[in-house]
Length: 196
Image (cartoon, rainbow, N blue to C red):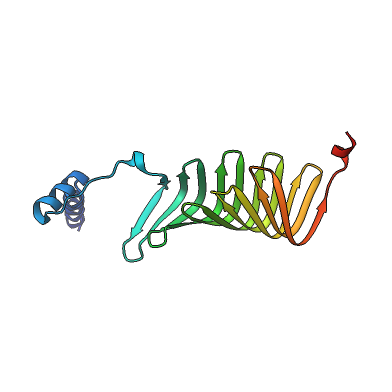
């Protein structure tokens, strides 16, 4: 019995070595036997980098899944999460559990997020946003990278020191630090700055 298990393990380990010898051998075999040319692309031209402890690819679903210590960087944006799922079909990236988005001095934490490249990040579940002296809490948010606008939705609160805005919908322009509130809203402005 021990000899059988030992021989099986040796055969299995040698068999996998021959099957998955190297990328170079695979490229050579594809060309030699099937006349297919394969080139590994230069990664310095890519905008999006994804890393995870474990990454799997489903060719049937056209989905790449990553789990544990996932990190996605896109230009000056970085997103960390417990799990990611990239759809090759619609060019979107979903993040699950303990999502942290960082861009320059802006940070955003939430339960789940979805990025549709190249311009929109949708987040939901315990959304916390901070930028400069501003902080916010909401149920959902949409961050437009191209316009540098964040729209807070569902019991949204945006505060800056003594000032705050509450509403169903708050749009915050990060470039101009201006606020637009929609729906039922409550605004409290401090008079300290007017007294100086």
